[in-house]
Image (spheres, rainbow, N blue to C red):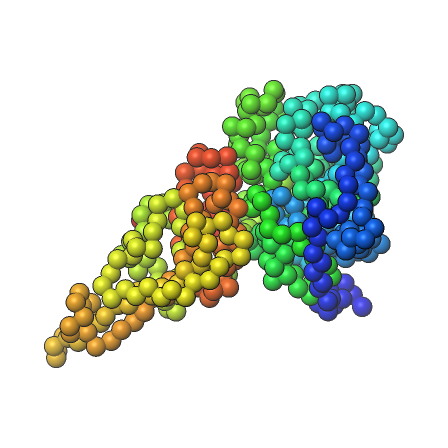
Length: 456
C-alpha cells in the first residue's frame, strides 16, 4: 500500500497528557534548566506518562508523524534524521516539498550532535561553547530566550545527520528549543531531534488546540497529544545571525526590540515580507516566507479604521453571513442600522482569550420599501412603516481584547471558529504592529491570510 493510501485510512487517536502528572524533571544546572544536561523520571502509575511514552515510541519506530503541543502552536513532529519519517510530515500536511522544516531539540547537547561528531561530551553551558560549535553571535540569544519561541539559523555540517528533506538542500538548518515541558519531554524520550512544522493542513491557520489538529489532519496521522491550548498562539521568531547585520526572517513572540537588547543584535534588521514571496523559484530561507499561509476558507478582509455598516455592505457575500474579529476599538454596536436584532445565541469559544469569552451571533435586518408603480429603484425604509420585505445579515463576532499578546493567542482560533460557524467573509480589525511584543507577528500573519487589505 502506498503512503498516500495508508494515510487516508488512518485512525487518528487523541491522548491527553498533563505535564504535571508525568513525573520529576532532574536538572544538572537548576539555574539553567534544559540548557545543561537533564532527565525526567516518569511516574510508573501515571496514564499521562504512558501516553507520552506511546508517542515517543511511535516517533522512534514508525514513519508516521505525531502532533504535539508547544508554547507557540501545535507541531507535527517526526524523527529529523530519517527521510521516510520526514516525508510523512509533508504528505500529511500536503506541504510543498521545498518548504524547509524547523528542528526541535531538548538540550544543547543534542544540538551539538547535529553540528558535528564528538561534540556531545563538552560543557552544556552556552558560555562554555568553543568557537566553531554554536556560533558566538547566538550566545546572548540562547541565554535569554531558550528554551522559548525563538528559532536560529545554523550552518549545516557536511555530512549532516539530518535528513535532506528537512533542510530542502539549503546550507543552513533552523533549530529551536521549545519552552513547553511537554514538548521537551517528548523529544527527550524519543531520543532524536524532531522536525516539526505547525500541525495543520498547508495554508490553513495554525492550530492552537488538539481539536484544530483533528479538524485538519484526521485520517492523515495516527496520534495527537492533547496538552491543552497553546500559550503564545503564533509561531516562533526566526532569526539569521550568520548574515551581517543579523536579520529577522519571520516575526514571532520575540520582538525586534527584545532582540536589540542582546549583545551583537543591536542592529538586527527585518528580512521578511508581509506577503508570500511566490515569485521566487528558490527554496525559502525559513518556513512561512514563500507560500500562502494562515488562511481560513472564508475570505479575510483586513481593515484599518472603524467598523461601520456602510463599509461592511460593500463586501457582503451572497449568503449574507459575515464574521468579525474585534481587537482594540471595534464594537458590535458600531453596526447601527434600524431594525437590528441582537440574538443571544452565542457560545463559548474554545480557548479564546476574548474579553467576553463568547462567539456572539446577531442579525442586521434591512427593510426594503415598496415603491410607487413605475419606479424601479428600491430604497431602504428608516422607520419600517412602508417596508414589505426583510433581509437579514447574519453576523458572528469574536472579541480578542486589546493587548497584542492576547490577540496573538486567540487569532488563529478565532479564524477557525468563524469558519466553523459558516461565515463567508471575515472582517478583521488591524492593530498597530509597533504596539506590543507580538504585534508585528499578528500583523504579519494577517497580511498573509488576508485576500483584501483596506481602510474603512
